[in-house]
Amino acid sequence: MRREAVERKLAEVVHKIVKEFHPQQIILFGSWAWGTPGPDSDVDLFIVQETENTRRLAAEIDGSIFPRPFPIDLIVCRPQQLKKRLDQGDFFAAEVLRKGKILYAA
Image 1 (cartoon, rainbow, N blue to C red):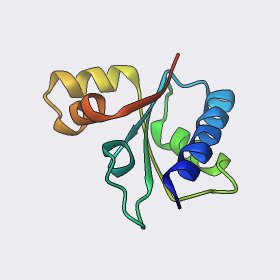
Image 2: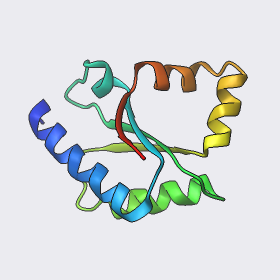
Image 3: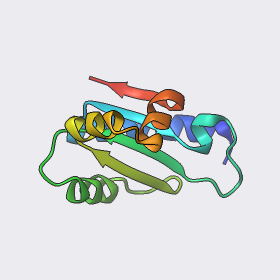
Image 4: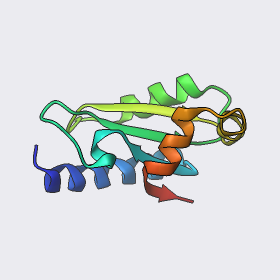
């Protein structure tokens, strides 16, 4: 899928997530954010949201994206989890925040 088409469809996906789930932030990370997507690249989204069960919320968000315009990988993290991960020097969380592209912020 061409970059313009992915960006257009991604905006629709982000709008749907924001409207239905009210996250604090949605951050694009991975090859699409870094500008290096290949033909089989999925879209990686890091969603910061207060919730009791991040896995259940990720499954609910994932199930709401239909029809799926492209492969999507979701990670949901509570704000306090993210802060703790950053305080502990978590490379992945720091990389997402440093190099990721913020698609939505409340």
